[in-house]
Amino acid sequence: MPINIAIDGPSGAGKSTLAKRLAEKMKILYLDTGAMYRGIAYYVLEKGVDPADADGVKPLLPGIEMTISYDGKSGVQQIVINGENVTPYIREHRISFAASTVSKIPEVRLKLVELQRKIASERDCVLDGRDIGSYVLPDAGYKIYLDAKPEVRAERRFKELSEKGQLNGMSYEEVLADVNKRDYQDMHRDFAPLVVAEGAVVIDTSEMTAEQVVERIEEIVDCK
Ligand code: DC
Image (tube, rainbow, N blue to C red; front, side, top):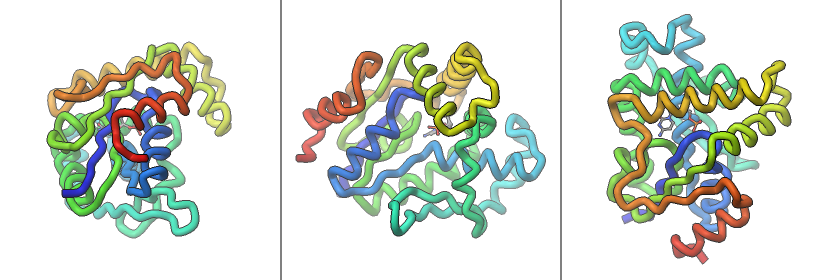
């Protein structure tokens, strides 16, 4: 059975940094499941459909063929939809909330969960997301729930957006409000919401550096 490491938690808790480093260290695959929801959100917006309009989104799903590949040089995950690499567009701020909104639609989730389970059944991997330990892979070998105070997570997001030149005049307070709004939506949807999975180790990263988080995880996951 492949080793599956599930890392869940709210936005800005440090999931992707940790998942990337862990995957590199263990020489296994890193599957960023949030990028998959972002890909759908981007596609839906490009079609001029409101991500909140389930009746508008559902008919688009059969026409979406998503493939995941890894850039030969950098190893960075690429999301390809119907042959188009949408990866360069999915990190924009507008896509974050759209991804959270479109991810409320059960049919969207089921489509992506099927692909996530297939990949996880075929190879060792670290997956990060919101429902990996609770819904996608409830039998994952390791389950980690990363958390941090909203103010700290918003600070990280603010820094990230400002470094990428994507703040577009947003203040820290606006970023904090967005972080809170998205987390509320992810935690309160009906189908597979963000919860602490049964058996997950909860780590609050508010006062920790990325290195300290990796060290803490290495104590839990046997990856030396
Ligand atoms: O991890 P992220 O910020 O890239 O995820 C974007 C959105 O996608 C997130 O707000 C909710 C949704 N998502 C989800 O519902 N389930 C996952 N496993 C991963 C992401």
